[in-house]
Image (cartoon, rainbow, N blue to C red; front, side, top):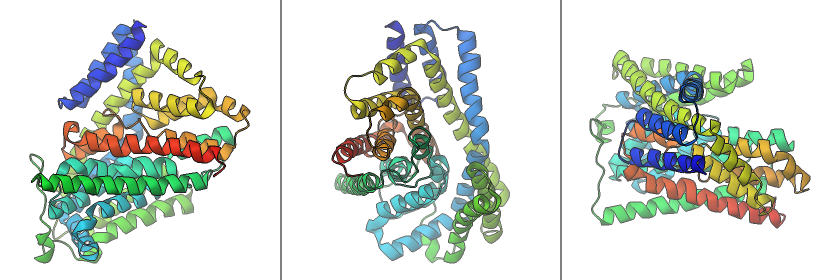
Length: 437
């Protein structure tokens, strides 16, 4: 019981300190120490093996992508290419389409196989230019950028290359397109709900007299720069993004390259193309150096929270909690819905919650005789709910990039990236039970 109390106190402490804008490395270490003390774990092995191994494993796996993603975003931002893209989109769709533009762009990039972290780096320069032009408060920018990559594309849309959509295939013998009807219905409802909510919040903010205010130390190029010729030609603005997407698919198809390395190679090529095209408007050395520093700072912060999650997963209390959850007597779908979300909320990881649940209960779900395609889509959508906690890696990264505070942004993230997808998971259970698969 003391160990479980420690888990709860650790998560509460992490959330509280994030709210107070403490650095994530300090927050993660303090949270880990609380878990260690209350669970009577050996502090030396817990820190050196669990915390540091979790941190170093994530940092090693994501080093290139964080580095290159941040550099790519910096090149696009400093050159004015992101402003050129934003200006052209607003001319085409109008000022009222800012949320729609950002959500669709995130949807396309995510469904194309680009990870959440890289989307945050790549999309932010465009999103912030759009928000400035439309005079939308920055407190809404994180939810707008993240909502499609961490809900619709991560778990709902059939065929998504996300880890969450591929994990169930190994347990149920299904494909990435399993439960297509459920997935499409939930995707449409999720997208529409988030779009309506965010636009409603924009109207409320403007009615209160709130405006766009750049973060401290942030210089955002005004969209008027596009009219005065300070940005690259419109076609040049789009070229690096087209190169990124085309090269990513090309490297995977032509050279059978793993997706992570394909994205890294494509990102490198896109950065080189950008530096060449924007050479008259960009200090390439400065952009690359500053982008690298920013990317590595975000990597350390995110890796730290992964170390905390590793300590939590290694604690005796965590095993007790997971065993109790997977043995709930509320039916297979109810058990999946509750267990995955509780585990994901504690660790701040949707993939972690889904993987732990399936490794414990995958065979049991199969033995129920329920349609495997339905099970695939239900557990997948369930993983996209309460993983979106303040200590979730995607939220940490996006706030780091945007230089925003969780205190300002999280309520909108919680509603769009936790409450709404959880409701969609309940809907998926209902649809699956009704035979709509």
